[in-house]
Length: 170
Ligand SMILES: [Cu+2]
Image (cartoon, rainbow, N blue to C red; front, side):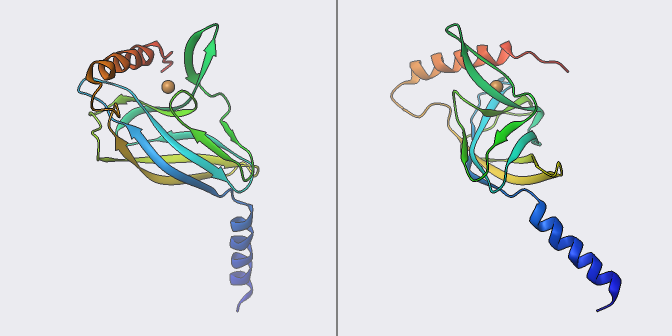
């Protein structure tokens, strides 16, 4: 083996050890109806080493943000997570309705149940190097219970209103 090749291999081995490793469990996206411009993507993130979810992109959305929902004086608010979503080493962090989520905005088309939505998730480990993980999220129907159509619509309207409350700073 010549000298320069062994140097390259050593560098690769080092990069492999230092880079963050993140497992993405059960990614899904909430389905939308015609005219709806925003929805959420949910999943479980587990990083082997301490890391942060910094950003995400998707071909179906013009703008993607990492959001958190919180109660503020009895009012549900959501907004962008500043400085990235922290992922402690070896601990599963759940992105779920009512909590952290990946917000897909400026949707280019409705996303329908049964389809898959590609997402590129960008993480940053302690080494500050970006790590991109590609996932395919399954689209789930808007409301789960088939009996509650009216309720479903009601809930949907609420969500829609929440969507419009986003502070867009383009
Ligand atoms: Cu949101």
